[in-house]
Length: 186
Image (cartoon, rainbow, N blue to C red):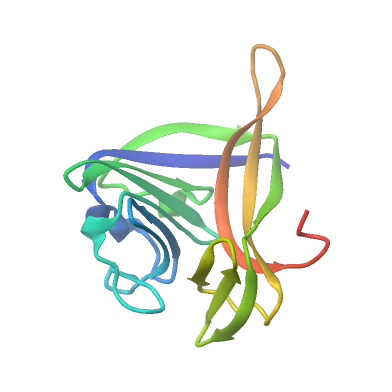
């Protein structure tokens, strides 16, 4: 089964401006020099953690994702940076902004996942606290039963080099948090 991944990029864009292309309820992984947070994109375009609103000016790098699309942003200078939107659904591509990038034709899209550190300390109001002695705790917007592990589900887009025929992972997109079962924890 062949799948086409579409992309749009922006230069000199703030995270606030880019978030208007994120679906409400999307998960946001946020890096800052002093912290790492997991949030949800709110209906008004802001970012909300389990504990409150995220100050966007503190974010250095963001990845916002759901099953349909992923937005990535990196701060270059003074709260402005570069962004990209990746999706298989052309209806999600903005008509009014960004630069369309070449499509990636994936000859073999492949499911994948990453096991997260720690075990669930339980879920409350749709959020689970993961805890590990070496790293402390972090809250994720998922229902993971107590003492179980969580994972991030991904999709790899495997393309084929037109000149040499070699297959390679052209891109990977984050999809969701999920329970890591023994079969998926590898």
